Image (cartoon, rainbow, N blue to C red; front, top):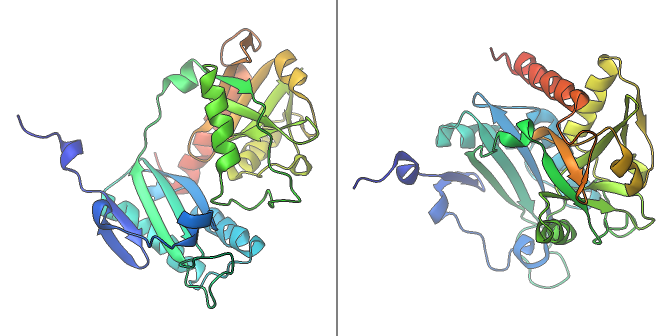
Length: 296
C-alpha cells in the first residue's frame, strides 16, 4: 500500500539562516530556551500562503525580547523574510506559523556574552476543527493563576509557558477545552492560549492590560472591529461570576480568530449556542483578513 501525500510531505524548518528538513534541524543541548525557557516567541496564521499581521507580530517579538533584555542581531525584515521563506518551502496556503527566539547557548544562570540567539521558524498545515465555530467550546475557571506582573512581564511572550500548560491540563482534566485563568486578586485574566471576552446586555467586555494579561493582536483587532460596528466596548476588571451570567463568552487568538464559548464550569452560557456578537465579530475579522491580504 502506498504512503499518503501527507506522509510523504517533507516539513522544512528555518534554523539560524538555513531551511532544513524538520528531522535534520537541531539545537544545542545547552541552548537556553531548552534549559531555562529563556527566550520569546510569536504564533500567527497564514491565509492563502500569506501571513496575516506579520509586521505586527515581528514588532511584538522584538518588544518581548527587549523586555527580557534579549538583543536580536537581525533586522526585523530578516525575520519577516524567514517566515515567508518557510511558508514557501512548505508549500502551505493555510498554515500555523511559530517564530521562536532563544538567548542561545549557555549553561548556568549567567547569560553568555555576547549572546548568539537561536532563531527557529515552523510552518505547519492549519488544523482547526470547524465545529469549534459552529458548536462552540467549553471552558473551566482553573486554580492555576496567571503569573504576577512583578515576576514576569505579562506583555512579553516568553518561552517559559509552564503556568499556561498547567492551566490547560487542569481544564482538560475536567473535560473542558480551554482554561480561564484568574490573576492573583481573583479577577478574570485570560485563557491558556487566548484572551477572554464577555457580552453583557450588548456590551463587549474584556479584562484590561492591568489585569496582568498578554494583550493579544487578535484581541486588539476584535476590540477595534467591535467599535467600528457600533458595539459598546469596555476594558475592565471582572470576576468569574460575570462569565456565568453573561449573554455570550468568547476567546480570541491569532490562529483561531474568534471562538464562542457555550459552557463555563459546566454552566450553560446564554442559550448554550454560539451567540450573535461572536458570530458577527468572526465574520468581520475574516472580512478584514481578506481585505488586508487581497484575498477573494
